[in-house]
Amino acid sequence: MNYSTLRNVVVNDAGNFATITAILLPLTIGVGGAAVDLTNVMREKADIQNIADAATLAAASKMSKDDITEAEATKMAKDEMLGQYLANLKANGTSEEDLAAIKAELLKNMDAGASITSTGGSSKNFEVHMTLKADVQLSGLSRILGFESIPISVSSISASAREGNALSMYLVLDESGSMAWDTTTVDPINPTKTVTGWYQCGYYQCWGSYQATNYVTKIAALKTAAGVMMNELLKAAAPDVTSATAQETEAKKLIRIGAVSYTHETQKELKPSWGTTAAKNYVLDLPAVPTGGTDASGAMAVAFSDLQKANVTEETQHKAKKNFSFSRFIVLMTDGEMTGYSASWNKGIDDKVRTACAQAKADGITVFTVAFMAPDKGKDLLQTCASNKESYYESSNMSDLVAAFGDIGRKAAKTQTRLTN
View 1: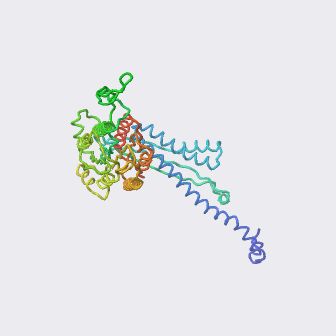
View 2: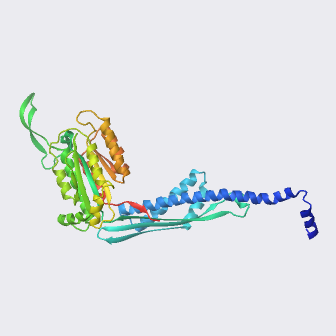
View 3: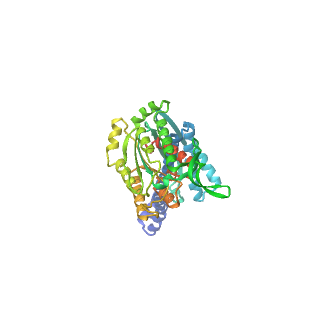
C-alpha cells in the first residue's frame, strides 16, 4: 500500500469502524484473557505455596519427634510436595501421561534440604527448606498476545526445635471410688492375697480365709504409669545422664509440673514446681482405696488457671531459668463418666468439662487425655477434650496405661514446629 492509498483510507472514514475493530479485537481479547490468566496464576502460586509449606512443616516436625536424618527429611518433604500437588492435578482431570511429564519437570526444578544444629546439651534445631519453580500454562486468549506460560517460584522454610525440652504440665487425675477396682493385671510381686469370706469347699460353701488372685488396682496402675511418664521427662531433660539425682537436677532447669486430683469434689492441688519429684510424690500419695464420685470440671479449671497465658507465673519462672520458649500441657485422665456424687451420668458436668477443655486448647495448651477402662460416655468426653487424635489414649489394662503415659512423656518433651519464611 503506497502513501496515496493509505491517505485515502484515513481520509475516507467509510468502513473505518469495521477495520479498526478487526485490528483491535484480537488485542482486546488477549488483554482480557491475560487478566483472567493472571488471576489464575496467582491462585495457582498460592496453592503451590500452601503445599510447599505443609511439606516442610511435616518434615521438620518429623525430625524433632522421630529423630529422622537430614536425608530422610529432605526426601519426605519432596514426596509430600509431589504427592499432594499431583493428587490435586489428577482430581482436576489431568491425564496420567501429563502427570508423569509434570512430575519429571517438578523434580528437575525442585531444591530441598534439611539441617540439624545442636545448640548445647539436649537442645537441637531442625530446619527444612524448599524452593520450586514451575510454568503455569496460559489459556488460548493470552496466547493471542504470544504468551504460552508464566514462570512462578515459591520458597518455604520450616523449623522445629528442642529448646531444652522446657515445659509446664498439669496432671488432672481421677481418684473416684471406681479407681479402687481391680484391673486385669496380676500383681507380679504378690500374685495372691488372703481373703476372708465365703468360698467353695467341696460341695459346700464355707466361711473363712482363703488365697485369691491379687490383681493390681486401677489407682496402683495409675501410680506406676505416672512414674513411667516422669522417667521419660527426666530422660529428655538429661539424655546423656544416668544418675537419677543428676537427671532431676537438670529437670529443675527445664520442667515444671503441677497436679490436681478429683472425685465429685476437686482435691487439694500441687502448684507447678520445678522437676518431677513433687508431682511424683503427689501421685504416690493418692489414697490406696479411693472413694467418691466423678467431676473433673473443677480440677480442669484449676489446671487452666495456673497454665493460661493470662497468668504470667509460668512465663516468669521459665525466663528466670533462661527458657525463653516453653510448651504447656494438661494430662486429663478418668476411668469413668461424669456423674458427680451419683451413679448416673450428668450432662451438665460433662458439658462443663468439655468447655474447660475447649478453653485450654483455644489458649494454646496441648491437652492429652487417657480413658482408663472407661465407659463409652467417658471415652467420648476424652476424645473431644484431646487436642488431636494422637493426644487421645484408650487403655483397657495396666500395660496400655503405662504405655500411654510413657508416650505422653516422650511427646511432651518435644516442642512445636513453625514456619519461618
